[in-house]
Structure formats: structure tokens, C-alpha cells
Length: 448
Ligand code: HEC
Ligand code: HEC
Ligand code: HEC
Ligand code: HEC
Ligand code: HEC
Ligand code: HEC
Ligand code: HEC
Ligand code: HEC
Ligand code: HEC
Ligand code: HEC
Image (cartoon, rainbow, N blue to C red; front, top):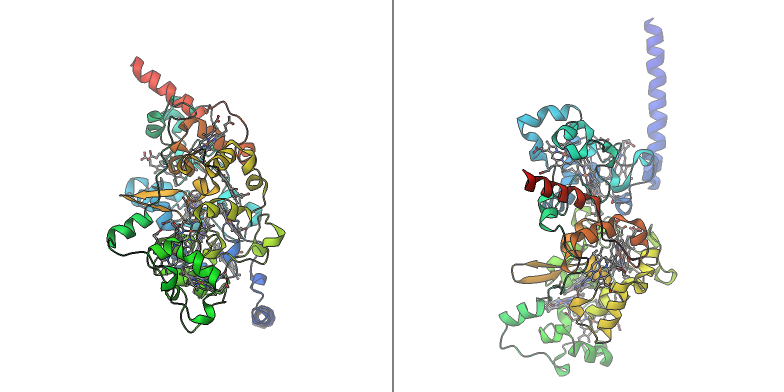
């Protein structure tokens, strides 16, 4: 008997030794993919190879994983007022709910390397999982008695995390708005105003003030720079270029790091979205910058060799925010939605504004939707994380569409895949069933 046990133990050792030899060999080759069972999620494909960014060094600790998720995501989830934060479940009255589904752990709902069970937004639970905790909803709300649990998160009804544009109170406030409001209220950017306030007496720099050494004093660059907001704000050549380094360099030291000192916010948010996420501090330089060659979305062929840095949208010597807002994007992006932009009424508005027929604040560019101008006190800056309001797309209602449109109209537009593909070039009725429910409740209350 002992003999058999010993033999099995012995085989186990040999298999383990062979396996670790195989895995070690692959690690040595740098092929980390051998360890995982499938392709990464849509959200994380760019950082897949930075295994330690999620797993830490040890590969076994659930706390390390939870901390990793939180360190990259918690700010953004909080910013949009998470409906189901951890704190909701530390309440003893809700403890029982967690025996079905531990909603304090991100990986209860979002696993990685499981393509066969992964749905949109990296969710790895069945679509009707809300039933675990909301079985009684039909009793609480008569209107919901015919709804299946798989329909809770249909676009424009509910989200798990961010419901700021979907709460009943918000909808009630915006019931019965027309499709198009009177006057758009997109605020103007305030960067230069802020600088000027602090530096009232400082005159703009002129061509002759340029402090580049002779061999780098390219005349075209000097005259472009002299007309830019950088010259007005007294940013001279050597504040971006260091004297000793190669001025021809296209590396990230010049094209991103040199901007950080003065543009902290833009740098931070750039590194939280798909354009800059590979350069996040947490990855401590393991990955190269993003490039269209690594993209899963369709990109223009002649953009394949480019990299995503600050200068992919801003010519550093002649920053032009109008160019950055649309034509810069279309030099890389080549999916159906992007390519349809100029066929839409928004595209027409943008052309009109470029021809001086309309103030730019009343027009719509790619940046109006994907890099909205955010107001904080009196300051207004451009959001540099293109993913901040992308998914679920109802996040765009408050930050973008409601400047110009009624809420019901945009709920309908954003719920339609065909509208998104056509970049909103189809006409609409401006009707959404969530608003019907809200209007019914208003009527009921009047009767009571
Ligand atoms: C974006 C975060 C993230 C990255 C990056 C990542 N993983 Fe994972 N990994 C996870 C999550 C989440 C799970 C599931 C954990 C759970 O179910 O408790 C997981 C599970 C695993 C497992 C367990 C088996 C399985 O397939 O479920 C292995 C092995 C693994 N990862 C290896 C790797 C390796 C090797 C890399 C780098 C090539 C890597 N992971 C990169 C998040 C990540
Ligand atoms: C190094 C930073 C980093 C870490 C660590 C990280 N993420 Fe992400 N995650 C991102 C970025 C950046 C995106 C893409 C932009 C976005 O959608 O916000 C993303 C996207 C997502 C998405 C959207 C998926 C999609 O398909 O659109 C989910 C869900 C998500 N992460 C959950 C997690 C969970 C759960 C963990 C922990 C296992 C985790 N993340 C770890 C940076 C990170
Ligand atoms: C009980 C399930 C559940 C848990 C737990 C959960 N999520 Fe989610 N998450 C979802 C669902 C469902 C979606 C799809 C969009 C929605 O309904 O809000 C989602 C979407 C996301 C997204 C993309 C959309 C967005 O609003 O930004 C991110 C990022 C994300 N989750 C991160 C996390 C992180 C980080 C944790 C842990 C702190 C976590 N989630 C915990 C269910 C869950
Ligand atoms: C692990 C349990 C759990 C799961 C799973 C869950 N919820 Fe909840 N949800 C709660 C709790 C607890 C509350 C707070 C209830 C309260 O305050 O009355 C809540 C509240 C809500 C609210 C009201 C929020 C408010 O502040 O008024 C909505 C809407 C909601 N959940 C939708 C959903 C949807 C949609 C899903 C599935 C995508 C879901 N929930 C999944 C536990 C859960
Ligand atoms: C706001 C930061 C910034 C300022 C100010 C700046 N540069 Fe540059 N410069 C850059 C960056 C970034 C690049 C790399 C551009 C690229 O990779 O496309 C560059 C590239 C160059 C190049 C080499 C590439 C080429 O197009 O020939 C020269 C020469 C140059 N700069 C000269 C100057 C001179 C002269 C000034 C002052 C009049 C100046 N720069 C001011 C950031 C700046
Ligand atoms: C020494 C500080 C400093 C450095 C370094 C710097 N900038 Fe600026 N930049 C400013 C100031 C000040 C303004 C004017 C106020 C504003 O718009 O924020 C400005 C304005 C801008 C604008 C808006 C221009 C406009 O027409 O409204 C862009 C775009 C810009 N910078 C990009 C960059 C990039 C890209 C880099 C790095 C290659 C960089 N800056 C480096 C200080 C700096
Ligand atoms: C994907 C294109 C894109 C990239 C990459 C990009 N920007 Fe911008 N940036 C824009 C657009 C578009 C605007 C103007 C939005 C508007 O007019 O509402 C802008 C505005 C600005 C402004 C002036 C408005 C403000 O927010 O104060 C500054 C400064 C700026 N960017 C700096 C940077 C820096 C620094 C980086 C790199 C960390 C960077 N940008 C990367 C597209 C981009
Ligand atoms: C230098 C090329 C380049 C430029 C310029 C550029 N992008 Fe991108 N963009 C990319 C790449 C590469 C990705 C990542 C795609 C992926 O991960 O598959 C991306 C991702 C995105 C995403 C996220 C898509 C998703 O599914 O998560 C949005 C939205 C986006 N870009 C919008 C814009 C807008 C708006 C502009 C102009 C203001 C712009 N881009 C300029 C290359 C570019
Ligand atoms: C009126 C607002 C609006 C305008 C204008 C707009 N978009 Fe979008 N964009 C959206 C919405 C909404 C989505 C879909 C988000 C979702 O549901 O996943 C989207 C999705 C995207 C995606 C992701 C596509 C994918 O298949 O995953 C990219 C890339 C993108 N837009 C780039 C652009 C570019 C480039 C322009 C300008 C040429 C532009 N968008 C103009 C609202 C807009
Ligand atoms: C700066 C104002 C502005 C913003 C912001 C804006 N729009 Fe529009 N939108 C318009 C104008 C003006 C029209 C043209 C109306 C017309 O001529 O009938 C329009 C047209 C449309 C149409 C086509 C209607 C038709 O019948 O052809 C749709 C759909 C639409 N917008 C959806 C959206 C969505 C969704 C958002 C937010 C993601 C948004 N818009 C943001 C101003 C705006």
C-alpha cells in the first residue's frame, strides 16, 4: 500500500518538474500568454502583458487583485456616484445579500481571460444577475411586474454602477423637454484667462526672444511658436527642449514628459484612457506607448506607424484646438461611426462653425462628445480621457447632450446601435419607455 502511494507521489513530482520546466522555458522566452486561457477583455487588451499590474508579484492574493482594480478605477467610479459601492454592503442589513454574490469584490463580476463567458464591459455574470438581490422589485413597483431580470440593464433603463442620468428624480425633472433646446451652453475654455490673471503685466514673447541654440532655430518653427498661446504665456523653447538633448527626438521624454510640469490634469486623464493607458504610472514603464498597429479598432493604414502622445493631436509649436477636435482624430480612426461624422447634422454644424457661420461653442466635434469641457468652479478644461464617458454611454447625457437636447431624445438616440454607427445621422421620434414610466408615476401621484 505505502509502496503505491510512494509511486504516485513520485509520478506527481516528475509531472510537476516537467510542467514547471515548460512554463519556466516559456517565461524565459517571454511568452507569458502560455499561462492564460484566452484573449483579454476589450478594456484591458492593451495592458494584458503587464501581468503584475493586476496580479502583483505573488499571483495568488485576492487582496492584491482587489487593490489593483481599485487603484486604477475607484476614482472614476466614485466620480460618477456608484449606485452599488462597497459601503452599501458593509451595512449589516445587506450582509445576507452577499451570501449569493460577494459584491464587495470586483472579480465576482469581472473576471479576466474568460472570453467564453465575458459580455460587454468585461462582465462575466449572466445577464439576469440583478435577481440575486432585487427579487422583490415587482412587489415594490407594479410597473415592473412584466419585466424579465435580463432586461434591467437595457440601454437607458439601469446601470449597475453609474445611474446619474437614469434616476427617477433626474428623469422627472427632465420629462417633457423638446428634442432641441433653445440655445446651447457649452462653456469656453479658461486656461489662458487663468494664466493672464496671474501674470497681468507680462508681455508676450516675440520671435527675437526665442532661446533655441542656433542649430535648432528653425525659422518656420520660430514664427509659428511666436503666434501660439505658448509665446503669449511666456513658454520659451527650452522649457520643453532641454539644451543638451536631441531636439529631433520623437521619444516620450519630449512628446509627453516635457508637457507634464505645466499640464498636470491633461497628463493624468490622458493616462487613464485608451490613448495613454499603457503609460500609467502603475505600470512603471513596462510598456511602449499605444499605437494604431496595436489597436483592435479599425485605423487608417497610413497611421500605423504613429504613436499616441500629446503631439498626436497638438503640434507643439502651433497648437490648434480646432484641428485637434476632429481632423486629428480622423487621421487615425477609420471605423464606420467615425467615418460617418461629416454626414451627420453635427458634422454640418462643425463645418458651418469653421466657415464662420456659427460660434464654435454651438457646434459639435468629436471632442464635444469624447473630450467634453468640464467645469470646476470658474475653471473649464477639456477631459483628456476619451473613455471617461464612453461606456455605458448614458454618461454622455449629462456631460454633453443635455447642453443642447432634451433628455428623452438623447435616451432614445444613445439606445440605438444604428444611430451610433451612423454617427447620429438618422432622424428620431424622441421617445423612450423609461420616460413613459416616469410620466405614469407623475399622473398617479396627481390622482392620489
Ligand atoms: C487587467 C488585469 C489582469 C491582467 C493584466 C492579467 N490578469 Fe490574470 N487574472 C485576472 C483576473 C481578474 C483573474 C480571475 C481571478 C479570479 O477569478 O479570482 C485572473 C486569473 C488568472 C489566472 C488563473 C486562471 C484563469 O485563467 O482564470 C492565471 C494563471 C492568470 N490570471 C495569469 C495571468 C498572466 C500570465 C498574465 C500576463 C500575461 C495576466 N494574468 C494578466 C486579471 C488580470
Ligand atoms: C493599470 C490600471 C488598471 C488595472 C490594474 C485594472 N484596470 Fe480595468 N481598465 C483600465 C483602463 C485604462 C481601462 C480602459 C478605459 C476604461 O474603460 O475606463 C479599463 C477597463 C475596464 C473595464 C471596462 C471593460 C470594457 O470592456 O470596456 C472594466 C469592467 C474594468 N476595467 C475592471 C477592472 C477590474 C475588475 C480590475 C481588477 C481585476 C481592473 N479593471 C484592473 C485600467 C486598469
Ligand atoms: C455585482 C456585480 C459587479 C461588481 C461587484 C462590480 N461590477 Fe463593475 N460592472 C458591472 C456591470 C453589470 C457593468 C456594466 C455596466 C453597468 O451596468 O454599470 C460594470 C461595468 C464596469 C466598468 C465599465 C463601465 C463604467 O461604468 O465605468 C468598470 C470600469 C467597472 N465595472 C469596474 C469595477 C470595479 C473596479 C469593481 C470593484 C471595485 C466592480 N466593477 C465591481 C458589475 C459589477
Ligand atoms: C449583491 C446585491 C445586489 C445586486 C447583485 C444588485 N443590486 Fe441593486 N441594490 C442593492 C442594494 C442593497 C441597494 C440599496 C437598496 C435600498 O437602498 O433600498 C440597491 C439599489 C439599487 C437601485 C436604486 C439605487 C438608489 O440609490 O436609488 C437600483 C436602480 C439598482 N439597485 C439596480 C440594480 C441593477 C440594474 C442590478 C443588476 C445590474 C442590481 N441593482 C444588482 C443590491 C444589489
Ligand atoms: C510646448 C513645448 C515646445 C516648445 C515651447 C518648443 N518645442 Fe520644439 N518640439 C517640441 C516637441 C514635442 C517636438 C517633437 C515633435 C514631434 O515629435 O513631432 C519638437 C521638435 C522640434 C524640432 C525638431 C523637429 C522639427 O520639426 O524640425 C526643432 C528644430 C524644434 N522643436 C525647435 C524649437 C524651437 C526653435 C522652439 C522655440 C521657438 C521650440 N522648438 C519650442 C516641443 C516644443
Ligand atoms: C512651462 C509651461 C508649459 C509647458 C512646458 C507646456 N505648456 Fe502648453 N501651455 C502652457 C500655458 C501657460 C498655456 C496657456 C494656458 C492654457 O491654455 O492652459 C498653454 C497652452 C497649451 C495648449 C492650448 C493652446 C491653445 O491654443 O489654446 C495646448 C494644446 C498645449 N499648451 C499643449 C502643450 C504640449 C503638447 C506641451 C508639451 C509638448 C506643452 N503644452 C508644454 C504652458 C506650458
Ligand atoms: C486625442 C487627441 C488629444 C491628445 C492625445 C491630447 N489632447 Fe490636449 N486637447 C485635445 C482637444 C480636442 C482639445 C480642445 C477641446 C476643446 O476645444 O473643447 C485639447 C485641449 C488641450 C489644452 C487646452 C484646454 C485645457 O484642457 O486646458 C491643453 C493645455 C492640452 N490639450 C494639453 C494636452 C497635453 C499636455 C496632452 C498630453 C498629455 C494632450 N493635450 C493630449 C486633444 C488632445
Ligand atoms: C495617433 C492616432 C490616434 C489619434 C490622433 C486619435 N486616436 Fe483615438 N485611439 C487610437 C488608438 C490606437 C486607440 C485604442 C484602440 C484600441 O485599444 O483598440 C484609440 C481609442 C479611442 C477611443 C476608445 C475606443 C474604445 O473602444 O474604448 C475613443 C473614444 C477615441 N480613440 C476617440 C478619439 C478622438 C475623439 C480623437 C480626436 C480628439 C482621437 N481618438 C485621436 C488612436 C488615435
Ligand atoms: C454626438 C456625440 C458623438 C460624436 C460627435 C462622435 N461620437 Fe464617437 N461615440 C459616441 C457614442 C455615443 C459612442 C458609443 C459608445 C458605446 O455605446 O459604446 C461612440 C463611440 C466611438 C468610438 C468607439 C467605437 C467602437 O466601435 O468601439 C470611437 C473610436 C469614436 N466614437 C470616435 C469618434 C470620432 C473620431 C468622432 C469624430 C469624427 C466621433 N467619435 C464623434 C458619440 C459621439
Ligand atoms: C452643441 C449642441 C449639441 C450637442 C452637445 C449635441 N447635439 Fe445633437 N444636434 C444638435 C443640433 C443643432 C442638431 C440639428 C437639429 C436639426 O437640424 O434638426 C442635432 C442633431 C442630432 C440628431 C439628429 C436628429 C435628426 O433628426 O436628424 C441626433 C440623433 C442627435 N443630435 C443626438 C445627439 C446626442 C446623442 C448627443 C450627445 C451625445 C448630442 N446630439 C449632442 C446640437 C447638439
